[in-house]
Amino acid sequence: MTLDRRGFLAACSRAGITSALLPGVLYTLTAQAQDAAKPEEKPKITPEILDHAAALAGVSLTDAQKKMMLDGLNQQRESYDAIRALKMPNSVAPAYIFNPLPAGAKVDTLRSEPRFSKAAGITVSPHLEDLAFTTVREQAELLRTKKITSLALTQMYLTRLKRYDPKLHFVVSLTEDRALAQAQAADGEIGAGKYRGLLHGIPWGAKDLLAVKGYPTTWGAGGFEKQSFDHDATVVQRLDAAGAVLVAKFTLGALAMGDKWFGGRTRNPWNPNQGSSGSSAGSASAVAAGCVSFAIGSETLGSIASPSTRCGDTGLRPTFGFVPRTGAMALSWTMDKLGPICRAVEDCAIVLNSIYGPDGQDLATREAAFNWNADLDWKSLRVGYLKSDFDPVKPLKVPDVPAAETPEERKHREERLVRRTAAHARQVYDQRFDLAALDKLRSMGFQLTPVELPKLPYDAMAPLLTAEAAAAFDDLTMTGRDQLLTEQGPADWPNAFRISRFYPAVEYIQANRARTLAIREISKLFEQVDIIVAASESEQLTATNLTGHPALILPNGLRGADAPLPPDVDTGFADDIGGPNTPVSITFLAGHYQDAKLCALARAYQEATGFHKFHPKLA
Image (cartoon, rainbow, N blue to C red):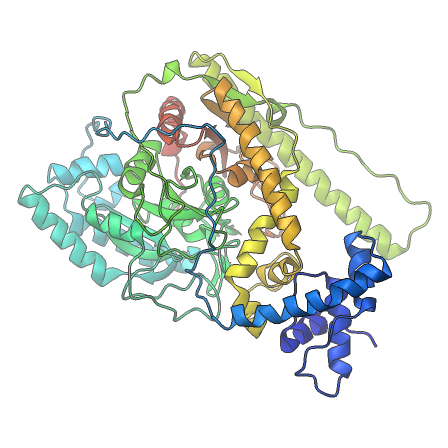
């Protein structure tokens, strides 16, 4: 008897079979279950099943060893039911806490008063919408000096959100009533001399994985459209306390993957034919479109970096453990980070200053100081660069033509070559921007030190993320509700969750041990330099998300009219698809909890280049 893959997975779910063994084992079990007179009963694991598992795992077992294992394996599988019966919500974290610090590392815990830049003079136009693309720092000064009101600024952004959402699809929920009440309260307090600080009266948007009482929190996913929580996420509470005004909850790709959500696909304001990338899709798109002053995004493996790159934003992925995630959807307890997406680096520092620090609930959050100093002597910082990221792009290798191939095989081969050739041309074109960044830094007086990532199998550690995600959304797989998710392809969550169920516990632990090596070795780089410059889409993205190091993604110019054309179809799998008049980015990295130094260097580069002042021309 044969089963197709979809039938196999469905039968597994019906039979309640989800051991940490391997696909061959479960496939055989499912076939037995379908033939059994009592399909509700779980079939026993047999020596023949162990043979399949051992072959797939590359383990040799003697007959005596298999016989010895059977009782233990069947009992182990029975124990799963008791755990599943607990029906644990997504908010329940495992009983272990990831620590990104290498042995012997010391963290500065002494907080000092932040030192922000002095606001440059800015004139207020009769048309308030002229302020749409100004920075938080500029808007804050206008609010503090009562040249504008929070209510007027909030209404302006609400109007823009309503105008551009039909084209860009970045809003899940407008929080209009809440926002207007907050804005009026802010104006009253500012008018009475009770100024709370630089975020007082500033409109912002939340990625819709943050709980906000009174509004849906959909996680971007089909089947969760009406989900709500009777509390506010810690980050929301802290921004409320700072006087910021929440105007909208923004889209994210379903369960924090990509830019496709249950309401469609969020678009890139620079080229609405493309997606905005994700998963912080709406946050990045709305900031780039001048529809909010700043937004909060999250990153597990690129979800701030990727949409910031695509949309031309300034995105800060803080050190793991800097910002509490209480009230945020969990995808990977050891990799999830919350951070700001803004138009300027200092805006990121302003926001981080209000949201970081332990809350007593997210136990991974560390007591560490973020001492922002806009007057820091950034020329004293040691700057390195990942040399291999800036080496010349290797020539495209054209595979040999097979001696014999069918017309269909030839067609597919030629189509692949066309795609690879186009991607290579875009890579060659884009590298000029990365190289120009190094030249600019040298012109600023830096002696750049070449460094390299330690040679470790970072991609082989990445299944840690999907294993934790499969646990976080176990109920979806077990009940078949994963079919409600928008995307159902081989690289999408439903399939990834199923695959992850077969990730052995031993291999999960081994990958975490390799992660310890990565933390130790990458941290050594920051003994040589303070900041590392890297290409945004290089191996560092996976490596530093695994190790918890902070990253700042900056706009690094616009592709010219001579840029290679983008592909006809945006699959959502690459952020460098390009096209004329679209933004590129550069990434700066720093040591653990050195986010203030990271922001200082990035701000100096940003002010020297001015790329953050570019914005899309929206129709």
